[in-house]
Length: 124
Image 1: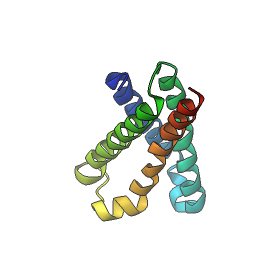
Image 2 (image 1 turned 120 degrees about the vertical axis):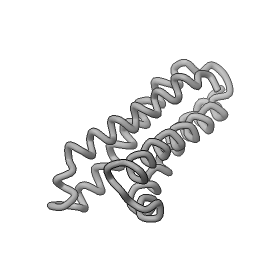
Image 3 (image 1 turned 90 degrees about the vertical axis):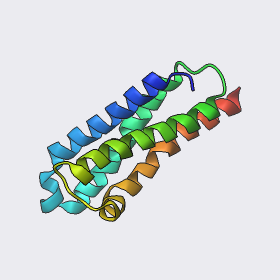
């Protein structure tokens, strides 16, 4: 991996920004749940795309491998931080409920860096 430090840092920033968006629009969760549920993946995809573009500017070789590793790292970072919040932290939720409500959305995370890595590898 080109930079584990940057990968983990960007993964944390993705989590932080999406969490901040969730807190800002949280009142929608009860007043307009479908809008809340639509906005959250949009914010996630926007952050992942932006940070993937930043990360790939430093990648010079094996972009598909980088994309796969980056997607896995970001997925794990976001899941791990969420587990601190939802399993033991202030927002108690069972793991099964968490996965059904939030966790499966995180499967979007690896799709973007893997796709970018694939396209860059194809161009090389």
